[in-house]
Amino acid sequence: MEALPLALAFGKSLLLALAAVLPILNPPAAAPIFVSFTGTLPSATRRALARRIGGNVVLMLAGAMLVGTYVLDFFGVSIPIVRVAGGLIVGFTAWGILYAPEPAPDQADQARMARALADDDRVSVQAFYPMTFPLTCGPGSIAAAITVGAALHSHHWPTTAANFAGGLTAMLLIGLLVALTFGYAGRLLRPLGTVGLVVFLRLSAFILLCVGVQIFWDGASELLRGLGRG
Image 1: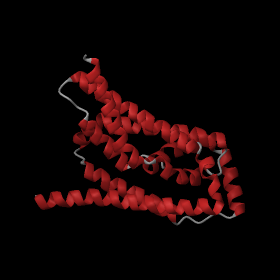
Image 2 (image 1 turned 90 degrees about the vertical axis):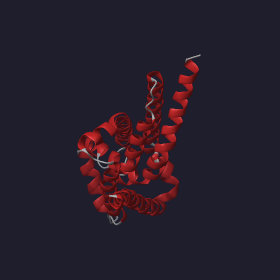
Image 3 (image 1 turned 60 degrees about the horizontal axis):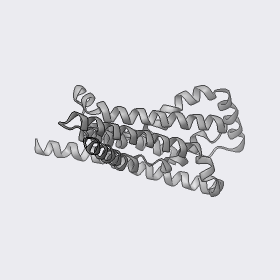
């Protein structure tokens, strides 16, 4: 009989974590930006980069869910501050993508050759910044994971263990979805064509810019309300 409540707790926590984090992270929305960063890389390198990004997303979200509240408390950093700083990073990154010039054909060939010579280094660097953070797993997703982690605690330790098991399973599923979406992003977006991909990229960058401004405003508004109450 004890197994049924624990199974229910596992399932509820899994659904809670998915519902709270996945819509904010939204891998399909980041797929065009991934393609713009990796379009000149070989397919095998792009898929390896996608897998590494997926793994990084799992580690970041799981870490934020498990210890995020304790880390913030230790350094005296509030979630609104994280949102303000992260919103600025996302906004500036999106602004650069939105107004980045399209390379000429010869420039594209030179970029392809340069990247082919440094694939391993670029995979190591780009896998975390900027592709994992902040473009895929930004401050909104991290704040959501921290919030989920705070909600999973219970006075009954077996229930707490089941809750966190469900939350960790959800983070694994999200990372797998990121890896699959990015790994096959080229095939998924190929029907758009070159012009359609450029238009979709600009629209995605604009939406990302709006998301960054929204994250910044959410954090700033909460800080301002705190000053008003003080």
